[in-house]
Image (cartoon, rainbow, N blue to C red; front, side):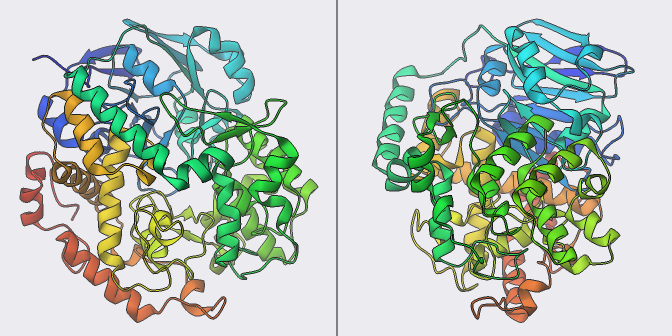
Length: 583
């Protein structure tokens, strides 16, 4: 068959024996799981039960059918694996140009398995694929590694944190784009894999160019017309959220124990940052939004999550220290949300804020796995348990919470609890309707109706992460527009209902994986603090939460224990793929 959108080629590399193969995936698999996160979810599920840091675990770098095309905001690539931090199935995606380069090289995905006997890096240039020695790169952080290798193509690598298998280590692409959360860098380090370098010279085949350009223009018009994009993200980047979340009293303070910091936030607001730094804009492949910000000297500036969690949540008022800590995290290859979260836990347990100098030093010690940094690098759950203070760990399923207090955005909190990868705001991204009031406003202070909203948004963004495009594009366009451009790119007819159904299929496979790993209803919850300790007079009612969880299970077609039914598997065509229901 002729492939459009997809290349119809998946590369597999076994680092244990150096074997390199390329195979053609079944077309139905690609149609049903789209690509990106969906393809990765299926491949990780099919790989069976493994230890996350063993050679048996796989890493799947997967692009989507829109990656490498001119589709707006299509510059992302997904990385799927089993998380050593949480034990759950895990995917992370990052922007930049790595994904488009992989597609132009002729591949939809790269599956990496095994463990190299000595340090190596993978070099891909179209049909030429090599596993090369990386001994001379060891001990170097990501920026230096990228500088050494970038003449060969786009680089994704680990720093010293990944080499040392720090459980909150990330894989960093092009020096600034992170496959964050979950310890992806530790998995890469466990395989003795320092870097992947990709160069592609081909073109991504598109089925109907005229229709594709028509749909592309429609999406671009919707993005330009969105105030959240053209007056928020494009002007200020993600830090524009700081003023909104502080006004709503949902910005985490003192490890999620208060609603107001003891210092003024004026210098941390996006308008003040823009005035002081005059930052430049940086865009990913085919992105009109350009939300990344860099200082005049080229230093990357922190995103909202990093800014919120490294300031009020740990008691630090210095923006300059946050900039330095953010850059250091990227260089060592560390997830900034996890680093900031575990430092917030550390500050709460010792009863003392973390100042600017200490923040930077703690990041360095985590990256080096040095002293207290070795404990902090195990993540917030492990660290809190090791100190005898598990109640101070703000996490779901072992994953540190992002920078929104769920007592004031209850739907977002419910989406943390039910997330397949743990405490994460991007699984359903209810930031959009509850905080930014897009695509329409919903009441953030109630759980009423949130079972349905959570399911819909989880399914939507499972599909979005499989196309794979940026979630920010959905402040303007929606599933109908992207279903249309997906159809034009691939020649496979997708309706918006097909698109959402694919998202539900992907979500269900991830749930089945976690069930098989021992997760269940008891894990679909939040830290006790949010049920027991009011902030601004707000608290999550435990009975209402449990009722919402039961409603959510019913809407998903799961039983009372959160297990997908046989009927649902048949409706989603998953009985053709899955071996069991995880029980």
